[in-house]
Image (cartoon, rainbow, N blue to C red):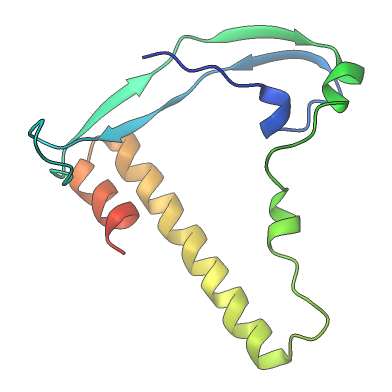
Length: 120
């Protein structure tokens, strides 16, 4: 499998310098070519390590495709204290589930990974 992306679209690399990047995780799959239903199994993967020297000035010119976490979790001024508390609890719960799913994927527990990420 191959994929191409611009790291500067995903992360702020404006500081420039030397970076080492890699990817690791698990990809869930269906047992049959005729099915799109996930089986609860997953294939673990890890990439090669890529070392890159990044030009910070050039990287700063690239528009970030994703907003920072802070941008995605800033509540409006019109949010009352009750809604703020509910929203913050929901964000903490999402972060907890995400960390659990990440740990399950890294440990090879594909059933737990599928349950946490695809049970909605």
